[in-house]
Length: 362
Image 1 (cartoon, rainbow, N blue to C red):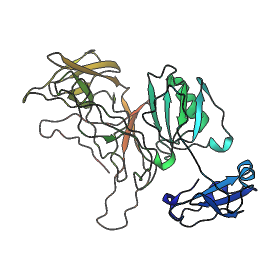
Image 2: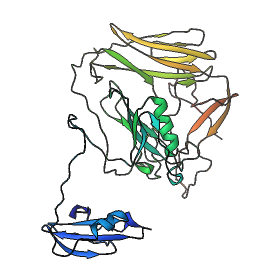
Image 3: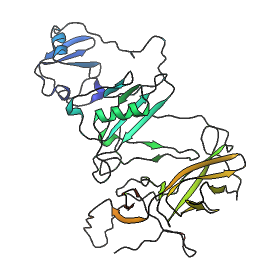
Image 4: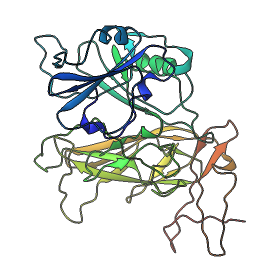
């Protein structure tokens, strides 16, 4: 069913490659036209168009000009279910806890977005998989996405809009604004997306209940117009550092007020693996895993850090940068790896002269 809000969109798109098609134009509740091939062009106010393919075309073929037609529609859900939010999707990929097998044409590696629910409806998973970026992520097919959702625990899962529309923004606990946390595949960055799923929490008390501890990453590490978080920043190489931040949050994970000049106390769980100073700078000492905790009063939070093997090599995500003019600039990401191939963004110890990261480029 097409209404005037579709504008001049060609109604032929849903029936490409189909042998039996039909278009029925209904104006003021009466059929005014019946044609075999769906067309394009604006639909007048007070009218709608029904487009059928194969069996649906056969069902609509009995309509004639002058026949009365009306359409009723509603959300289809069990009588005891109160629908509070709805979003369109493409394919059901998990049903009754089992992944569904989909045709091969739907299983090319692409960026994907999915939502899944546990059997009792108390847990929800929102998943974004990046793709179309060979140096970063190839993407996944729908069968692979279904397997991924089952492993997470989803009893039912739906594939949402993917490709360049795959976008995930998150407001981390204690923060005021949301951040883009994935890497959309469009070269121009994020695109306008007509549908989305958003969750909101009520305003909290603003009193600190805990700390959200994270790594302080450079938001402009990756090429392109959109900022994105660095990759695997919870990993550190021996002898290097990772700066940590602690954001206070209240009972709804909203931002909480902290008294001025109050800084949390930092502590590393395994002093052999690494140490953390009063400013939250973790210095890696030896390979292994440790937990760093930030605490002030009754509020506390922690983060797990992994110290890899010694830094063995550096790699750039972009192999070539084209600069067309004399003063043109370009950016590229740099990641390090140890001898076993485990990767992380490198860093260097802050000096007394400058707390910023220093790198030498040739």
